Amino acid sequence: MNEADIVAAINKNELVFYYQPKVSLITGKVIGAEALLRWHRPDGVVVMPDEFIPLAERSTLVCDITRHMFPKLLKDLLVLLDIDGSLTVSFNASARDFHNAFFARTVIEQMADAQLPVGSLQVELTETVTLESGDTIRSHIQPLHEAGISLAMDDFGIGYSSLDTLSKWPFTTIKLDKGIVGRMLDSEKNATIVESSVRMAHELGINVVAEGVENNAQYQRLLESGCTKVQGFWISRPLPLERFMAFVKEDIRWSGMPIGLIHMAIIDHVQWRKQLVSEAAKLAVMPKDAPQRQFPAAPPLSCDECRLGLWYRGQGQFFRSRRAFQELEQPHCDFHEVGKRLMEMVALGANLDELTPYLRELSGHSMQVLNKLQELENEGLFDMHSAHEQWLAHELHPSRQPETA
Ligand code: C2E
Ligand code: CA
Ligand code: CA
Image (cartoon, rainbow, N blue to C red; front, side, top):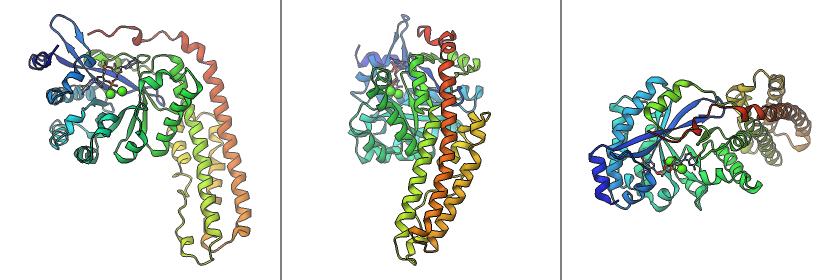
């Protein structure tokens, strides 16, 4: 194969997108897909992107592919949004696409022309793209972010400075590389890498998609780790548009319990308490009238605004029928009330001795909160493992079918 073959494929309209479903581990529903290129040769052979994208990426040919395919993507997206308006489709962009500012502008304009909501599109970039490029490319990508089109860091975990890149680029999602997901059950060390990545993303307010999920064991472990989105052969292979549409319409619910999020909530609560107490202790040793006491760097004081509170009213509602979940609200609110009073005392000039009774009360409520969360987690873990057998008996797996047109 050479470049001329690829050019001919473009001209003869032989390139199409397949769509690989992404599933939410919270609702168990299909939430979107990644668009993946396939070259349908007239002889019936389907050529995979790894066989021609690397060659195309050596020159601006890859940009020709993107430019040719993007309107097709938007056309497919319109059809998909007709079935379910909340779907999000991501596509793979190459570094070269962003060598000039033109591409981002075109993306934004074409989305607007097609009257597509910006939230329905995501751009995937590999870390090598971001590493190799300087500020120019970053400035060319920035308008996408500003327009509300989200950016995902692809193949997260195989580079060297993912963390550095994450802090500098406006990524809203990381896609855990299928290599690290595939190895996560080989050793506890590998599982820890996945779990720490999920935890870090949670702290940064970044979404995580685990890709390359190939079996139930990986799926379950990801649920336990607090990961919220998965993609992989276990859900489905990439599908031609029509088959992806049928897949969405089937409305399969991928069962499972977002048990890992309870663990996240536990850590969030512990961190909130530490931050508050640390700030109070720092200010309490300052002079009574120190201006800093009026402007504490405290975490959100309201029980609706801390991470645990946000989870409780949002994704945590998955557990609303559980007694432990219902019994969590009161001690959590009490805990925050004491937190507020503590900071009021700090503002009034209280010293450490004067704060001690409040700190004690705060700890008491915190223990109750943690007890309820652990009760919920224990119940969940128990249920999850007892449901495991049923899971294994689950027959409905499009992933068992080969990828065909
Ligand atoms: P990628 O972006 O990392 O895409 C994920 C790849 O993993 C896809 O391979 C997908 O089919 C495969 N995959 C998904 N689930 C599983 C799984 O459970 N197990 C395993 N072993 N693999 C899984 P695919 O479609 O062959 O694409 C390969 C690469 O080609 C992509 O890697 C991406 O870098 C590139 N590519 C695909 N479409 C485009 C495109 O439209 N433009 C550009 N520039 N690159 C593209
Ligand atoms: Ca990708
Ligand atoms: Ca990837």
